[in-house]
Length: 139
Image 1 (tube, helix red, strand yellow):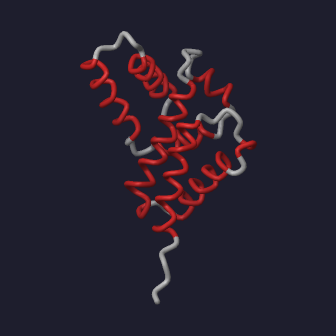
Image 2 (tube, rainbow, N blue to C red):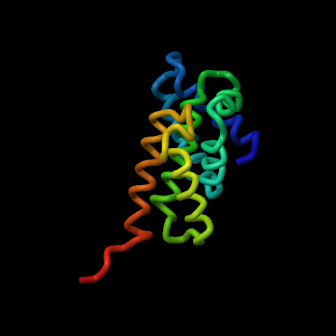
Image 3 (spheres, rainbow, N blue to C red):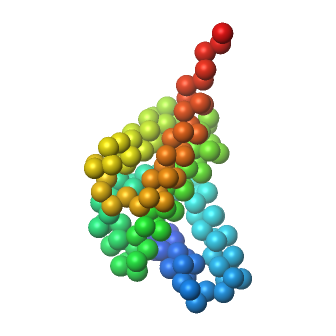
């Protein structure tokens, strides 16, 4: 995702999370965030953002208090790609996803500042990808 695309995501998250946003506006912003999450290259951006230190993520969020929400969107992009396109990924991409998820989750001290929402999304992506990567042997 380009820096302008990331800026758009931050802007949408800020408006989506604002208590002054109406339900109708929130629905429109949510649809735009889902489109960003499901974009073809969004998972690569997600891995890159999740590898950044928490302070850098907050800075990328423009200091708008959206760092944790931006981490969640990045993790959701990875999760969405794993759930929808895992079988179509090249082996190198699968390895990159596994490595990035492991570096974020195991052990947690390697990634201080990872929001619990993002950790949950990454854990779900990891669990969902394992059966496809390592099918049960035939009896």
